[in-house]
Image 1: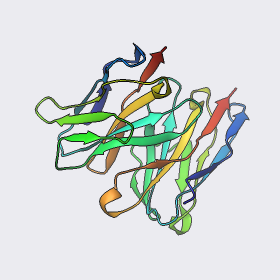
Image 2 (image 1 turned 120 degrees about the vertical axis):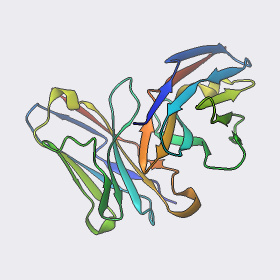
Image 3 (image 1 turned 135 degrees about the vertical axis):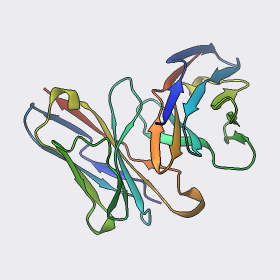
Image 4 (image 1 turned 180 degrees about the horizontal axis):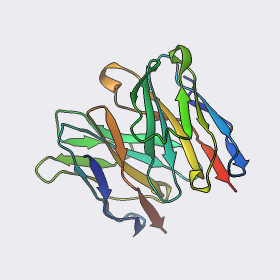
Length: 115
Length: 111
C-alpha cells in the first residue's frame, strides 16, 4: 500500500512570500491532518479534516494559513505571507476509520525555510 | 485543556541496558495514547498504542508501555536496547477528537 505523499520535500522562500504544500493521503483514509513541527518540538496540529469537512482548526493561524481538501482526498496547505517563525517541517498524516481510527500514518514532511 | 509532558528531552544509554522514557498527560476527557518513533532521516511512525482493554501494550521490536490512569502516565520501556533504537520518541494523546504530541525524547544508544 502506498504511503502518504507530500510535495515538495524542501522549500526555501523569503519572508512575505507565499508557499503551498500538497498532500495525498493513503487511499481510503477519511481523516487528514496537517502538523507543524518546529525544530526541537513535537508536532503541533494545525488542521484536521474528516472527508472534506474541517473537524479542528483551532491552532491554525487563519490570518496567514489556509487549507483545503477538495473532494475529500488531496489537500493543500498555504501560507501567505510567510514569516520567519514559519520555518518548520510541515507534516501531513492520514487515518482510517473503525478500529484503527486513531492510528495516524505520516508522510515524509516538507521542510520550509523562511529567510 | 489537554497536555502531554515528556519529562526527559534526551536519554543516553549503553547498548543492552534497560531504558524508560517517561510520558505524563492531562485531560478532562477519555484519551487514547500513542508512542511514535522517528528514526534519523525518516518520517514518524507508530510504535504502539493504547485504546482500551489491557493496560500493558507491546510493540513488535520489544518496547512496551503501560497506561496508568491514576498517575496519568504512559511510560515507554525496553529491557535491553540496541544501537538501532537510536531515534526520537514522541508520546501523543487523542481525546475529544484533538491530538496533542509531547516535545519528544531523543534516545541515544551508545556502544
